[in-house]
Length: 448
Image (cartoon, rainbow, N blue to C red; front, side):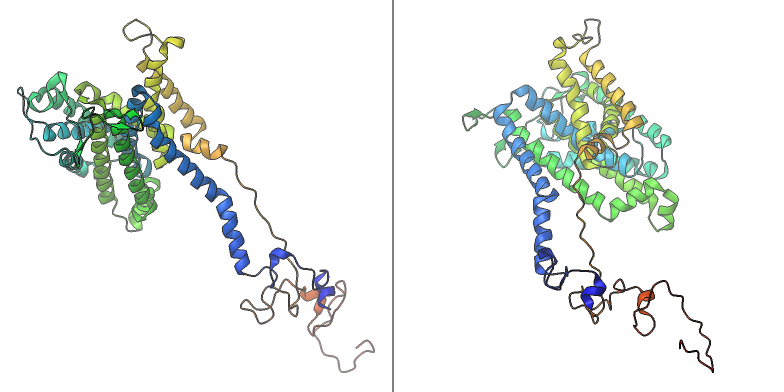
């Protein structure tokens, strides 16, 4: 009877994957799901990250100094872009003064760690302590400006932060005992637990001489990973949800109890500290601080990084930073083989100008055609796994092979037999026969 009503084959005809209870939550099902997760996207993600780590560790053993220095510039740019993306991409606050906080971090590190000499001041502190204090100094500078950042938004905040660039350049060019003036200052090498990130003393690893660039590569990689992990934790937690709510709908965020002004000020301070950390890493990689570098063009470069990479994403900020920071280096390196690119001072388009033209066009293309940036483009190109669909077995309440049986936790299976086929007393009736009237007759007809 059960076989006839369900329309299935014999009772013993069951699929191996359905298990003994017809597809219930069995151990085999959980094992199969775990196996599919390990062999699908999860395994691919683990293999991709492992390969990326292996390549990053092996880079100093094979590449020359030009690529190592370009990679260090990209790492420092990625750290600063992550901080700006927290402010602009996640919270929706426009900042044009990010280069100011990089300058604060770089010059504070130099002044705190250098020894006084030749009319230049310095405190001679241990370099790790000087780096930490430089990041805190950038945060203090952001905290001084945070009341303004908490009350302004949009273009008004962008114009207000633009004033920081002009103020910072005036200080850098005129505070000669601290900054060195137009000529800048040399950067003391980092010394961590007796290990010096410099060319001397000599160090050879696997028959490869490790100079300052090779040693700084691993330091920059560790700093970038820690900065990215912390930012992802912020975005994935409650602060990240509050920041996204402020960006999408400020009034709704206030109604929900989010302290909008406090969050804006706090994120501005956090972004400033990221900028200070990027400035310290940039000073160590460049080995000299020059005031001319920390201008309005650097702030525009950082805005281009987060737009090209993808707003509101840590991975997008890193991808945009690599693109924008590496492009001038590549054009300088291979400018002779490219048309319309000339050497600086020769009257043609210099590699730096060509790079700005190219990533300016990239910003326009992203805004018009790729709102998600490079990260969104990678998501579109990524192959999507096919959906797995399992067939649905129609069972009657009395069928022992059903998912839960008549006395299961979810009650009888209401998909088993339609009510029109059973009738009120469980009799099988023809689907096309109309129901009888509910009236009671004293003289029943022969049909009754």
